[in-house]
Image 1 (spheres, rainbow, N blue to C red):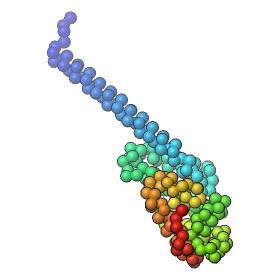
Image 2: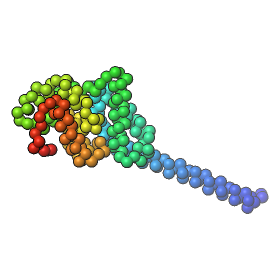
Image 3: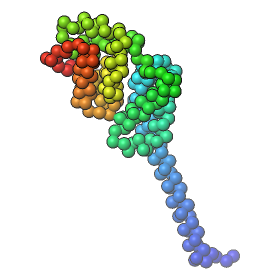
Image 4: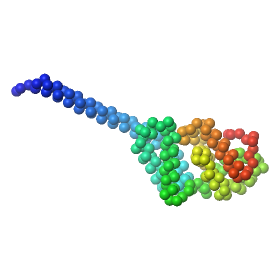
Amino acid sequence: MTAPSPEVRGVDVNAARDAQDAQDARDAEDVRQERLGLTFDAFHDHHRRLWMRYAHTQVGGRPAAETVVDTACARLKSDWKYVLAQESVSRYAWSLLKEEVHRWLDERGLRPLLVGTAAFHAAIGKLLLHETRDETRDEFAVLEGELGLYGAIAGLPERQYDVIVLRFVLGNDEEHVAEYLGIELATVRSHVRHARRRLARELNVETDPTETEE
């Protein structure tokens, strides 16, 4: 039997090396994708419960909230490598969740359904009575149940609105609000302070200049 020529043996060796390199590249990609999946799963597990609670306050029911959150999570997972490259993963993900909330509401011609919930009314006292003078707190207690107050809250700048809902309606502490929104703690406190003063101004209720943040 004739032995292969050196040229043939060289081709076989190169082909085997190329095949191994290709397999190594596929294995490395599989490992990378698995790691990306693990980081997404960790992010998902940490954020889903809060996202569900927030979406529920906006769309008014658990099935609708699940639809919104599931869609947002699917979008995140499909672009997770891109998401990880963002300056703040939490801030980017929150913006995407808000897009899905707005999309769901717009498709049905609805507005956020926070008004009328027990959580909304329970939160107003803590949010607003902290900021007002003693003699005007009874007035706020009356305004609490009126649509005018909700309209003022709904008219807040978007980031102030998010902070107010997360902080006072859903009961998260300032540190967790900062984490979920991907912003600084000082920024959360600033949003709360400006939201309180804006609401008091729009409702024509005098604030106490000596009042400080909690």
